[in-house]
Image 1 (cartoon, one colour):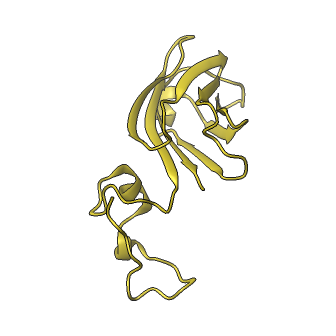
Image 2: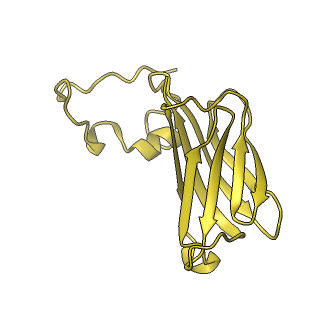
Length: 146
């Protein structure tokens, strides 16, 4: 893996600007000039989920350094689980989900959190804040810090 050293114009404790190292999104997904960097031990799962009817979500994995596959299941209407044994460390896991097709799908809120060391929970809600299935594109990013 390439070594990403601190740009010379950054002061210790300062902010690294987008122009200094490329955007975090580009770095994580390998579209920047810093492909395959070791992010100081941060493990990443990035992908796109889709779901219909009462089926489990299907994942298109874009990037995965968790050390295994995340299995996605549907628990109940609008509630889904991503499972990988021991992958999601307490107080060190950040989960983010974005729905770019909000008007098409009718999903107005997406909640995602680490539930245990073995799984994360994803919840999709409609405009009335009731659980709702069916989303065509849900962008998911999971970061696990050392």
